[in-house]
Image 1: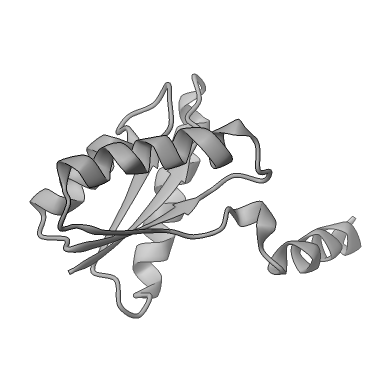
Image 2 (image 1 turned 90 degrees about the vertical axis):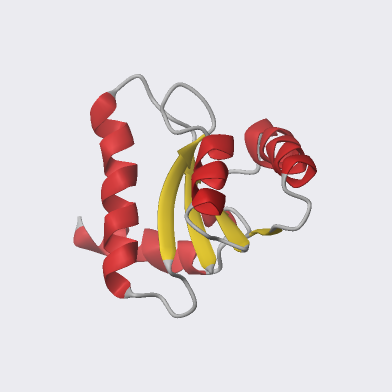
Length: 121
């Protein structure tokens, strides 16, 4: 079973965290081919943590987890913190296939999104 985890920073503002959960529900509704589980995980402040989301996925039967960093830039969280968390998860679950996509801001689609938003104004 394959899980998709949308990972975000986490916020003290609950509405911001809820937006991530809402996006996960929207992803789930797309029935993205190959994924049976969809979860959110947060780097800090909010719950569940990334490690807890991975653990939950494993407990639900995931043998493969894809983490999609919902971050705009390749700051320390993307280049250091998230890889460190992934290494911890690999130590705990050596048979779990874990893949991390590029962060959202690195996507080639970002320019189209920005142009589209600018045209709306």
